[in-house]
Length: 449
Image (cartoon, rainbow, N blue to C red; front, top):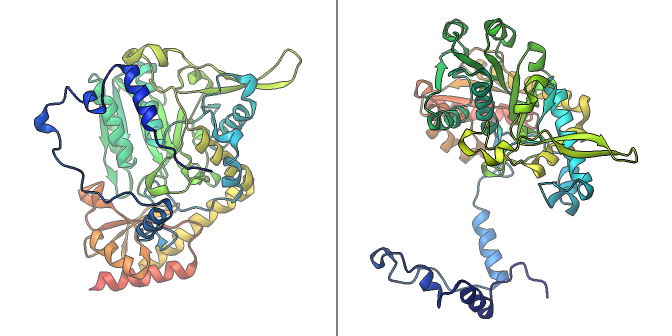
């Protein structure tokens, strides 16, 4: 008989208790004061058969509102994009979803090659020299880039745009608070883009790096060429947090002289999944490659001249030096990186460019439709997101939009109280003209109430 879950038998439990030298499971909690222990049984129903349990859980799950049940205009870092069906078929193969740590290259060539291809495609998209095998998510990758800048330059100040994802800034502050010798300076926006005058004024001899997002959190495209000119002649590094799908259309940050490019590959083959897991990428120049956090896969030859792949250039200090290490990241997101690699390969260069163009076209069509409806749409050159001002709280608007089978945009007051009643609208290649028109129509009706 096939079992999805085999619980411990009483014999198994007894063997484990005997091995660790206690008489009962209760004895394991002997150090916990009795006054904090629950003195009654948990208020839960009796056990059900597997069939009945699955039916009940499916009924509960059917109450969820998802992008399958509703049309979604929610982005803010997690997007509804086309994922080729080959992605799930490939990542479900056992040779790919097993060990994520290929320390033994002689039995891990498939996994190592998949990671190597991921690194290669990330380098092509970003215009950088080298990329690692992936990181937990874009936020982690960004914070690690800042740590590298502090370590490399020996400077203490980091100048960052408030146009960065607010959660990326939160993660950065968490990192910097651990090492209190570091200073993070957040530069205000001018509308929906970074105030370049304030950014330039904030850079000085103590600056370790300047960081911006491309396109930024508010959907607008920053002037990377101008920003790079501000750090010319200084020791400061230029860090760009970039949407890799947008790079199918926009000029790669590497061509503007970026030192480190980071981001999230959720846009390639990784579903929303109620917020995770994701897959961060980290790309940089040859000059900095020995300080890259995480893992690198390199191409080599065996003693018979056959092409092969191995882990290479990983700084062991990440494992052993603890708080004094450049980074404490020594893991990766191999399965999600594989999903992104398959998605990028299936789409190809032209397909990726076509999807990026559709995102920009659809977003700007929606932007114009909101303007025609009388909405105040904030200025900025948009990729696939833009900001719309409403007359009512966005939380109320979004709650009412659900009645029309629409998932509204992100409530920007969550990120910044200065954007009270402002919605960040995401329009991807999957949104049709009819869906956009219907959304704008219903949003207009709710706004006029």
